[in-house]
Amino acid sequence: MKKEILFLKKYQKDFQELLKESFDENTDKLIKIKNTFLNCSKKGGKLIIIGNGGSSSISSHFSVDITKNAGLRCVNFNEPDLITCFANDYGYEKWAEKAIDFYADKSDVVILISSSGCSKNIINAGKFSKKRGINTITLTGNNKNNPLKKLGNINLWVDSKAYNYVENIHQIFLLSIVDLLIGKSVYSA
Image (tube, rainbow, N blue to C red; front, side, top):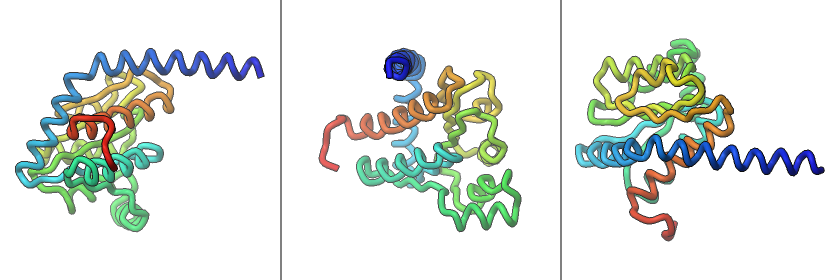
């Protein structure tokens, strides 16, 4: 039991340090993203958020909260029928790109999450969004020079190779933007 307690204490300390460092590095970008979201909404656009695995769950959570609590339209592409249909018809590496092709408008903002920054389907979505001139925001971790990070107009990067640290910080970033839009962290949901 002592070994587990030491592990958890170190885990918490390491996470706290990484979280502080990540916010220090990205505070200006978080404010810029808030303003990008507001401009998108003023132009009648919507937010589109896509991620794989745990990042898809983060996408769903963020999409609901920013729509319900902050009043901005947001959709995520986590429906199994959409993913399996587009993956079957266009290939798994192209399904997210095709979803953007079918659903995104020029006034929208596309948010792409890949902890590694190396997910081919998310990279292809980023390339397509960039080619189309759609404002794109990326959230990545791992290698600072990952391919997805090079495709966004605004890029939030977490300096860690630990997937759970990266994914947790991505979620904190996104939900802090919701609270930043609302202007407070305690409100009636």
